[in-house]
Length: 315
Image (cartoon, rainbow, N blue to C red; front, side, top):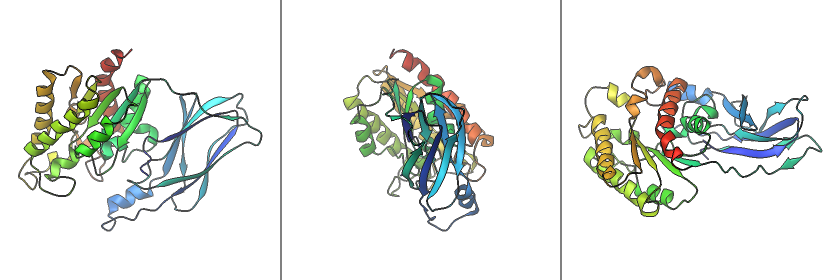
């Protein structure tokens, strides 16, 4: 489920690699719109890396039966290599089933060596997950990891990232990250929480503060980067949400929480999402919420720039 950031890693000398997969249909609720129809019809791309170098992306068929996708078939290849295949984001939170992986008969197959590079844990909503990108290598999470030569853990989930404390507890309970990057707030612009209950910007800021506090309970000195939301259709519309509040109140609340905490927390950092994407040119025309490929690239550059000094202090 939600295969953003998921990949298959192995070492082989096979000259051919085939994935047998099924994309599970996820009907729209409520009924489909032209925008969702466009999204669902887009090809489901896999991205191939060989010894950590990008080779190509290849698409599976847009249907919901088992199919075989040839990742590579090159008789000129020589010797073993580490292969990494990024799984498709596919559509929203739909399921991708990997039934089998095929290699040449007699080819070597080994487990890939452990990746000892620094690990950045990214949490956010569908923007972090990668909704709308053409291929999985174009999420800002993957681009940042490539730019900084790190392992990126994508903990983005479409339609969530409400700063709920149970998620903070989950992050706090994990020991597999060196740096945390969070981009929260976009789904809260509507003025309600995960259950649909009204929530003011002030209430959201208090919840955001508790979110950071919970993580700091088990990771008191690990670097944390807080990224405020990028441009959203709510910014482009007149008026406020159901509580009469505009997005800037949520951004100001996040900024205030972080600035106050920075007085005693030198490992807490802030990045301005609007400095990365502040023009509708970089949003999908279908919803003016999710960044297009160019927008993702701008977010990746901004987040990577903010994370670079934090990683330098780890080494």
